[in-house]
Image 1 (spheres, rainbow, N blue to C red):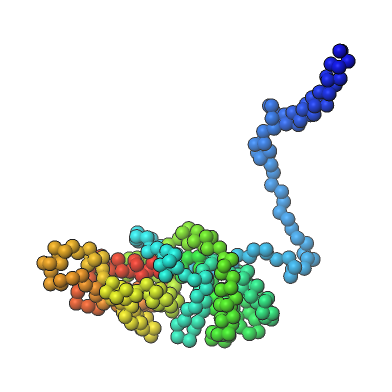
Image 2 (spheres, rainbow, N blue to C red):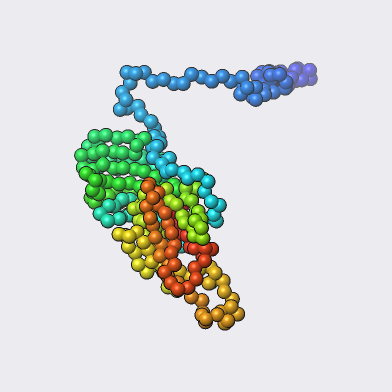
Length: 326
């Protein structure tokens, strides 16, 4: 009987030894290893330095961030204005991943991604076409080839980019068409969530200000770029006759003639309509005029009808239109 008990006791000895070793390894200043002490006692290691004799063509930045992503002068003391109209999916205003813009003889692409995301795709495009690269600078967003110079910069809308292909100051249509097709084929794999997050996190770059009884919007971008963006989105959004409608455009004068029903007019109740000269709610014609001011552009809304157009009406329309550029 005793021999059986002894055999059973001997079976527990290895398990007891393993448990003792395990608990001993966990013990430190208490019953277990407090890993918080490891962080407090950690010391920084010296940075990794590659030898000067390395092949610079082989070792480069894995994810270069072009400085053009930070372009755009921030204006001081912007006015408090209401949030812009949301360009919700399904409204017809949500941008495509890659779109064409044109003013006069100049054309370029607008891509719905920040420059840091677009730059690797631009490099991949050049490699896929086997273009002879003469110069490449991620910090400047420029790739020079024998066929054209590709230039990447941040677009007016936050989180978007502009790409130009030019040679001698003239747009190269074949380059733009090939690049538009290349980027469009990769739009399915683009991360729209990160683009939206950057848009929401970006700082306000437009300034709504009041000059006497008039409101205006100061846009820190050249007038050609502003006109091209407004022309694109007004053509998509101002398509409701009697409510908001784009009647005419003038690229030479940088103006748009629109028909618009103000919030004041839309808010009139039946009793107000009965005791007014107008027996129904009426829209009116407004000129949206752009004026250059150095490297900035000023947007104004000018009444082109005989109906009243108050400062509040003016601000309402300017907030809606300037919302296309955020």
